[in-house]
Amino acid sequence: MLDYDLDVLNSATKYPSIPTYHALGDRGTLVEQATAFTGDVLLTEKVDGTNSRIVCLPDGDWFIGSREELLTARGDRVHNPALGIVAALRELAAGLKIEDTGRIAVFYLETYGGRIGGQARQYSGQGRVGYRMFDLAYVDPDILSWDRARISAWRENGGQGFADEDGLRAAAEEAGIELTPRLARIPADSLPTMLDQTHAWLRETLPATLVGLDAAALGRAEGIVLRTTDRSVIAKARFQDYERTLKRKG
Image (cartoon, rainbow, N blue to C red; front, side, top):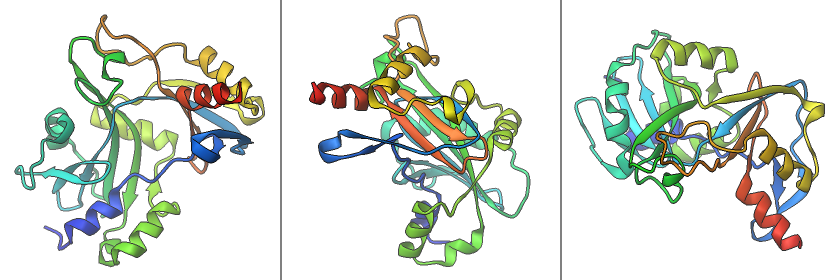
């Protein structure tokens, strides 16, 4: 196995923060400053569960993690049952066949339903758990020799090598993993830019979740992720952010 520090591996493979489509102001209120996009923009459903990851090392070792920590590894090392992530993803992780590129491949998934988060019943009224893949990154193992402060800055400034849309689709198909729903691909100049326009656009574009797990699900969607097809620009637009902002504005 590769020689690495688990804390460093954890930091190097965490999912970076994604900005909101409209900038955040005081007390979580959005302001009239939209993210600038150019070219085609891909719209996907943002699923409200828990951010999860499968980390595949070049030597065949693998780890399952939440957004903040590694939960288990091949052979059930460092096992942590938090949020049901390991139970949901262990079989998938064990069966992944990764092309040997010499890089660490990190599959990012949203695990949802069950008892995961306050919105679990939007996806299942029967306690079912599902997962959808939403991103894929590649990390050079040499980065594991860096200190954690350097890795954190590198990660939050776009250092991880994310797959573009074609690469993400190909990897998901190869692994047999469903992606978060693709809603549309639209030109950037057709995006709404005002807060009230964006709220109305969200309701029109995604009136209900597309990833319900059973007929008893309540069905409210969390929002939409917007990204360029090469993933150079990415942002999220959540219903609750616009509802809270517009309510405060009266």
